[in-house]
Length: 220
Image (cartoon, rainbow, N blue to C red; front, side, top):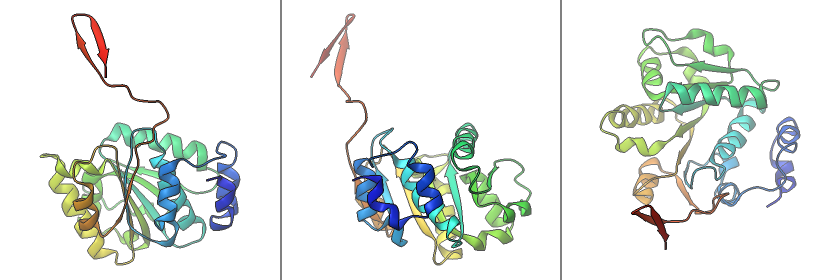
């Protein structure tokens, strides 16, 4: 699918930014669009690393912001990843929207975030924000959960599960987008999220599997 085919479905400002680097959408991106990505549908995206999951989130998030529907929260598991995403989004979309990163003080509601459109945070920090009744949360329209397979992590999993449950209760019309390259039970998780499931094996570089033994690798 060519990017030009969805020109009418996304804001012009977003299309003008994307067309500088993108001509053709990747398989997972096309599947997500056909599953209702731009129509408010919850989606669980299970595709390999570097297959284009982040752009799927950008399409729905930027559309929501530019069209005045609401903010987007982008949840990542690590502060380092939050910093990386902040730099990437700032570079690409800094002239279109206001982007913030909230990963610090757990005893604050970060009221200043009401003035920002895209908020990058960790699950632990967002859990704190919900418990502090951050007033700007009611303006959130899209929640992206990167590395959603960490629901199965003994340390982070319970917090993330409770957080998702709370957000769905607090934000009745929120659109949830879960991203992961490694989910063992995608069908079960998609049902729990009430989400459409997008599974694809395409990757930009072919993956070869082999066995290393005595200094040599034998490929399948």
